[in-house]
Amino acid sequence: MEVAITLAGIIVAAVVIVVLAIRSLIIICPPNRVAVISGRSRDDGEGTARGYRILRGGRTIRIPLLEKVDWMDLNTIAIELSVQNAYSKGSIPLNVQAVGDVKISSREGVIENSIERFLSRPTGYVQQIAKETLEANLRGVLATLTPEEVNEDRLKFASVLIEEADDDMRTLGLDLDVLKIQNVTDEAGYLDSVGRRRTAQVIKEARVAEAERQAEARESEADSRRRSEVARAEADLLIVERENALRVRTAELDATALIKEEQAKVAGDKARVVAQQELQQERIELEQRRLEADIVAPARADKEAKELMAKGAAASIIEDGAAQIEVFKRLVDQYQAAGDDAKQIFVLNMLPDLVDKIVGTVEGVSIDRVSVIDSGNGQPGIPAVMSQLPAAVIKLTEQIENATGIDILSNLGRSREPEEGVEAGAD
Image (spheres, one colour):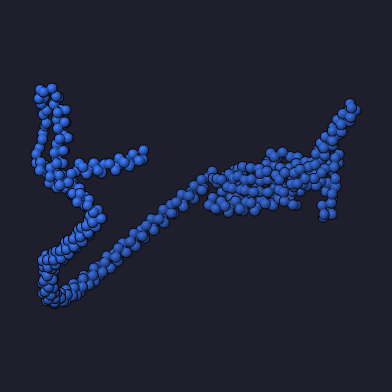
């Protein structure tokens, strides 16, 4: 078991060592750098043997012990240029300050120059070489230009300088990205004199132009006044002509208006008469409608209402008579069917009316209070009053019997017996 673990550890260590070894042999080049792999002779395609190869981005594998790798940065290097007392065209000494950006060239055919000159060199060395070269080119360009050209057209000056320095930069294996002129001065005051002379010339030209403009303005003002007077006279004449035409047109319009006014008066009178006639006709029709609504229509409606009421009363009388006849017929039929008891049935049917008549005789009598007085014979007052009620009822039935000949109590007794018999049979 321990042997297996030891063997596994050895295998893992060997694998790690192999991986690290391979990793150390693989060269990966970023975009802002150039890898120079030297140690073997290679044919560059033009029949010239070269002992190195160049890798611009990507990856490759170096041969251990036979090849080594050097790096060159392609980043921009800022340079400040300063030239003192550089003679321009016309032997005027100038001081020029400028800034530029250079870098190691990565172009085919140029990068070999930079490798030969700057491989393993620090950035400061490259910066110093580029600065001295550009300052020399700057002095050479200044000798071909006048101070005015240098100061006034700095873009042209910079473009000429770039063209002059391009060959030298390519020879060194560098690229000049940007070059800007910051300041141009001279210790003799030549540019200031030129500026003052130019300023005086500009002021002079401005004054001359101002005088010319003032003269032109006065001339233009006089011409404008003349044209204004002519235009005013023409306008006055035109105004007079327009006023005359306006008077004529006003007279014509007044005449036309007068005629139209008379015609309108006649038309108005005619329309007023017609309107009055129509209004009178409307009044007549309105009066007729009023009479129709106030007298004729109510009379007609009253007549129709009375006719309808008369018809309704006649119909009611006829119907009541027919109903009474029908009732009498049915009573006669019932009395005939009753036989000997018909008289008693007739009186019993009339009994409610008789009772109402009898009660009506004392209808006007108002009894506010009944006082019961004890007679002193030993009987209470209220029982004595109550004992008189049966006698009064019997007396009332006797009076009805004397008036009608019908014994109500005996008839009620006969009508009660069958009912009791029915109840007994039911029991």
